[in-house]
Each structure stands twice: as C-alpha cells, then as structure tokens.
Amino acid sequence: MADATDAVRLSKSFKVGRIKPFWWVIINVVFAALVLWAEPDFIADAVDEYSYSVFNRTVGGPLYPGKHVDDIGIIVLDDESLAGLNSSWPAVYGLHAKILYKLLTAQPKAVFIDFTFRDRRGPLLEGVVSEERVPELYVRDDSLTMLRDILKLYQAENIPVYLQAGAVNIFQHHAVLSELAPYVTLVAGWGDARRQADIRALTYDFAPEMPSKEYLYEGQKAENLPLCDDAIIRSGTGNVRGCDISGITAAAITIYRDFCSGEKRSASIKHGWKCDASLIMPSHAEKPGWLAWRDQLQDRPMWLSWPDMQADYSTWPDGYDADGQAFKPYGCGTPDIDADVSQRVWTNLMVLFGFGERTKIVCPPFHIISAAQVHEDTPSAGRWVGNFKDRIVMYGQNLQGFQDVIRPPTMDIDIPGVFIHAMALENLLSNGSRYLSDKSTYSSLLAVDLIEICTLLLILCLRFGLASIARHIFPPLPKSSSVSYRDYNPAVYFVLTGWNKILVFLSMIRVVPRMPYVIGVWFRNWVSGSRWSASLDLETRELARNWFMCLICLLDLLVSVAIVTFGAIILELTVLSIAPVNWLAVVGLGLLSYIPFVRSLFASEDDEIQGIPSNDQSSKGAAGENSASA
Image 1 (cartoon, helix red, strand yellow):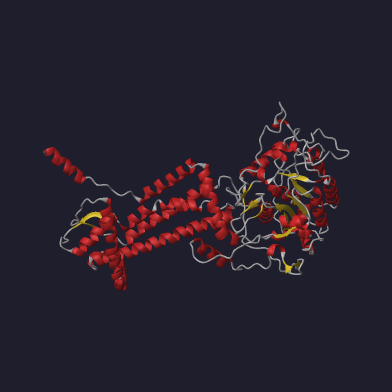
Image 2: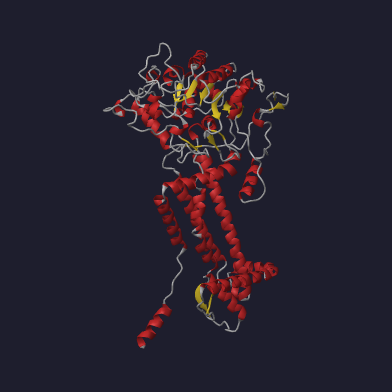
C-alpha cells in the first residue's frame, strides 16, 4: 500500500515542461533540412514548379517588363493557313519555301524554323551522294530543292537561319538535313532537353542531355571524338557519328551567342541587348573548355520570366477579310490591361484568394501573324510581315492534333510551343547571364535550398524572439490552484473546449470599452516597474493580455509575409537572380512552428496563485482558460 502511495505521489510531482523557443527553432530548422534532403524529386519539383507558377502569375508577370519582346516576331502555320494556302498536312517543303521567301522581303535579322524536317519524301537530289536507304513507302514531295534554294538566298543576304534538328541523338536518320545543313545552323529541339516538355513553360534548358552511346559506332568513345562543328555538320553527309554531338545547343542560347559575339556584338549592345561574355561559348576546337562551359549551362537551367503584357497592334495597319471587314492578327489589338504594376499585383493576389476577376490574357507578348498572312495572295493579305523588319523571326506550327503547345503561367489559353524559344531568347537579351535559375549567377552555393533554410531560420528567430518580448512586456498569470481536471472523451472535450473559447471571446468583446483605461494602467505600471496585479482585477488583466497576444499573432503574420516577400522579390528575384520557387515551402515549414508559437504566447506560468478564493468564478474561468491554453 505504501508503494502505491509513493507511486501516486511521484506521478503528481512529475511535470512536463515547455520546450524553450531556442529549441523550437533548432527542431524546425533541422526538420526542414531533413525534408529537403530526403524529399523525392517528383515531390520537390512539383512544389517548386507550382510555387513559381503562382509567383509568376501574381507578382512576377507584372514586375517583368519584357523589354525586348518587340525584337522578336512569330509566324505560325495553323489550320487556317493550310486552308488559305490550298495546302495539306504534312506541308510540302515548297510551302515553307514560299513563306520564307515572302518573309525575306521584310529583311528580318534572323530566322528560326521550329519544324523537324525529317523525311526526304523522294529520291536523292541530283549530285547528292549518300549511303541512306530511301524508304519504300513515302509521300512524294519533290520541292525540297525550292526550300534549299530559298535558304541559299538567306545565306547570300547574310541573314542567319536556325533549324531545329529534332532528336539529335538519332541525327544520322535525318537524311534530309544533309542537304539543308550547309545553309543553316542546327539547334537542339525542344523535346531533346530535360524538363522542357512542360506545358506550363516554366523552364528552358540550353544544352540537352543526350545518350552517350546511341550515336557511336562500336568501339568509339565520345571523349575521343571532336565536337560537331560546321566542317562536319555541313559536310553534306548528314552523318554525325564521326563527331561528338554534345556541341549542339538549344535555339535561344545559339542565337544569343551568334548576335553577342564577333562582328555583331557591338550592334547588339547598341540595340540594348545584354551581351555577357560568360554566355559566349568557346571554340569547338577547344573541346575541354567547351564542355566545361556546357556543363555550367546544364548546372544552371533557366526559369523563364513571362510578362503579363499582351502585344500591342494599335500601330499596325488593319487586315481585311473576303467581306471587307477589318481585323488584327489573331483577334488581338490594343491590350486591355491596367498599366499600373501595383494595381495588377493587388488584383492578382485578390483573385488568388477568390476575390474579384483578373483580366484574361489571350494574346501572347510577342507579335504573331499566321503563315497565310505572310503570303500576299490570300484574302487576309496585308503587309503585316513588313513589321518584322530587323527582327528575329521564329516560324513554328499550331495545328490541331499536334501537342506542340504550352500554357505560360501568365496566360489563359494555350499557345504554340515556338513561344518558349522566343521567351527564353528575350530573357537572355534582357538579363544576360542574370537570367533566373535555381542557383545564383554569383555562386552555385547560393542555391534555392540554402535560401529556403536561411529564410525559415530568420522567420523562426524573429517569431520566437517576438514571443519572448511579448511575454516580458505583458507577463502571464500563474495557474490557479483552484483549477480541477477531469477526464473526457474526445467528442466532449472538443465541444467543451469550443464552448470555452466562445465564452472567452465574448468576454474579450465586453472588455473592449475598457481598453483605453487598461492601456493607461499598463503604461503607468510599465514605466514605474509595478506589477499588473496591483492595478487591475485578474479577469480584466487576462482578457487584455489575450487582446495583446492576438495583436502579436497579427504582427507575426505581417512580419512573416514581409520576410517571404522580401526574400522572393528583393533578395532572390532582384539581387541573386534566383527564381522564387521556394516561398511555398517556406510558408509550409514555417507553419509547423506556429502552434508552439501561439502556445508560448497564451500559456500561463507554472507557479500557483496564492490567496485566490476557490469560489471566485471569474478567476476560475480565467485560470481554466489558461490551463487549456497551456
């Protein structure tokens, strides 16, 4: 019996203390680091992409000016163009030749062709020697000569043409390129680069990751082969098995390299383009240096900045249809969007939380015309193509049944996939090496995960520091010895707890008229160093303290939002050139410390109050609330 009594006495004397704020900070930071280390990529990538998509749609889009969108123009071969040009799909090479010929009259700065010219569709051209096997079944198309002749004209006019080489790891099967390669610069296609097959158009890899063995002969090693340079690619054989195809890069970085180096560099800088030497690839002859440069590109992929602007066609002449009705390209005209950036950000934030409506963006930021509108013999003719003079023009497709479409975070419709190359190039022209990525342009050590941990650490330190200051300014009441405890099942417990909170809230409402007096008492006692209990009754003091701690919670919310906003917009976006992909993770991990933070604000002291009458119901209610909060 004595043993049982001792056991009861021991259990009553045992107390579970609260974890100090310092240890909550350590626990949260360690937990966050473990999450970042152990989190699977398919979860981490999804969170990052969603975070950046929301940021770009709400804040990033209005903030990004898109200074050089007018330096790029888009031509799209769509179903309407096929009908207007009396053509079928697949479009014959002669159709592309006609469109490119009409574009040549506008004297563009350069042209990127976002089509995969894979099949010859006929016997070898006269004078062409190749070991390729002509397929038995094919769609007869003898107009490849027309396309080759047009590309010769571009070369004669010193207008560079860039052609998408498709899946370059099986380049040896693209025999038709053997006849076009001498007149174009081959670039990697969209689908060849890791993470680019993303309909949300968030990332853009400059150098695709390619298999190391698929294009090699038996016994060959890629490290022993020269990089594929012009001498090999333009040899006319269409076979790159004698060189390392790691030398082929994506369209945006290839065009940027050509116009920001050599004789064109000075003109590009005068044009306002940001030409950084670090993005200019070294010579292919220096393979180790070139591969090191390429590795740097792969280590820092681009996160695209999409503006929420729409192209303005107000200065373009009207086109006219067969009935004489005036129209603008793709139904676009003067953009209907608020010019004030702060207002757009505020509207986007309200829409994000379900309030109001955002102006729908259905026109891309680049000027776009259809292939039919380039050709003057169609009913929709207008010399719109003349507006593309001295621009880099990108020619792609938007055909029903072909999934070459993207949905940028700032837009409300799908647009052709060629726009991802246009936006990547615009980001380079505007920002140079300070394009957004998951690593800073200054050092690869300044990465998203490090910024995430540091931001979380700052929030936690300020949060629990704020809690300590609040408890010092407004000390809590000790627990009352008159409080009794009973065991309840979960349902009854939650009902009683909820009812108790309602009563406390009503009591807080009733004390509002007395708040001026309470504030005056608090100030006088704080200055004199006196204790609150000497001036206010316990219930009024506790209710006033509840209001004070609610204000502290609100202040914590504002401070946390300010830290996340500052980290995302000022530190990451502006200073470090890091894409704000981690703000959602910071918010989620920060919420883990919110419950102990609130508990530390409202918890009572462990010391018992002496001299409180057991029949003082108001004191019991206040003390009971404190015990529940603790």
